Amino acid sequence: RPRAAGCAASHILASHARQRMAVPPTVDSSVSSATLAALPLAAAALLVAPADRRRRILARQQAPVRRAADPQVVEFETVNAVTELEHQALQLRADIAALEAVQAEQRLQERQKIFANFDADSSGTVDVQELQKGMSELRKERISIREAEHVLKANDASNTGVLEFDEFDIERLEEALQRVREKDRAAEDQVRMFQRMEKEHAEVQKAIDNYLASLPPANEDVGLATRLASVLAYALPMLESFRYVNTVLADGVPTVAAMVSVVAAPFALLKSVPFLHLVFFIGMQLLADKRELPMMLRFSCRQAVLLDCVLGVVTIFLILLGYTLPVPELETAQSITVVACWLVFAYCMVSTSLGIQPEGLPGLSAYASRTMLPTRPANTDSLDDNRMLDDNRMPSQ
Image 1 (spheres, rainbow, N blue to C red):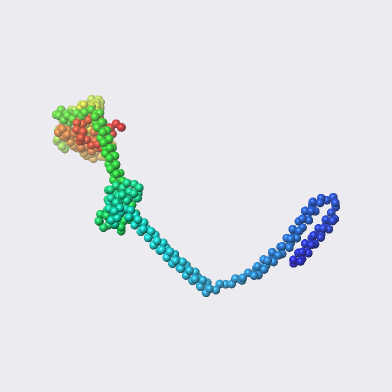
Image 2: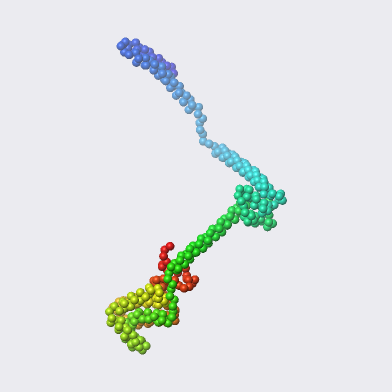
């Protein structure tokens, strides 16, 4: 094959030479020159290609033939690999143990060195002063004697008042110092919180005092005239309650019949004069807002007005019941309403006649007190600060 390739190359060169001789003189000579220059390269390629192919064939022939692995050989190689890994693991553990021993020795030497620096008098122990000085130098900050005492007490397992070498561990000392300082910071935060609360309370008390100082003084007179006027304040709603007295109640209870006969004239006057009830209603509201009047009279007027409003709501409710209930049941409801109203009026009148402000009606008394124009009481020490703040009558600061 190489000889055949060589012959083919020679044949190509000869043929090209004959063609060149047959080219007319008028043709550009540069074309022929380029063709001749390319011919040797083509011939060399023809010669090299068979050689490369031959080398690849020889390589395939000389390659070792792969055979199926022997199970015993595989097992033997696996055991050897496992044994080698175990040996390496043992060696690694031995190296780690040796390294740990070296590190422990280094830590011991470092600990001995630090202990020697703390033990200024070479007594073999570290007392409070030495601990304070040593930790201050080590941490580059001042350690108080109290902090040093707490740290020593936390690490003094033998309760000797000093730290021996076995009890001396700089990491434990640092942790004990950190705990002491965290506890001190917590105590300081609590003190600051209490101081802030006291300051806020003082500011609130000052605001209350300033507010009370701006109010006119309260008239706390509870004389006979004040008591009688306060009792008469409840006459308006009490007259309104007699409209619920029916014949069953009047005929069944002689006392009720006597009361009806007594109030018949005032009740008839109240109903006969146009807008008289409204005049009394507005007049009592105005009296309740006059700060120069006695407090008990003002409170009684305001509470009597509220009771009159409640009776108006009850009247509407009873009218609606009249469309659904039979007459006997409606009369029973009216009788219950009359008795309840008279019990309330009896409490208010008796309490007022004794010089005690009747503040025991749930919800109603508190609302009456809250809607009155404020005055400055004579005894401000007995005032409740929370009540003053919740009264919604203090000006915004």
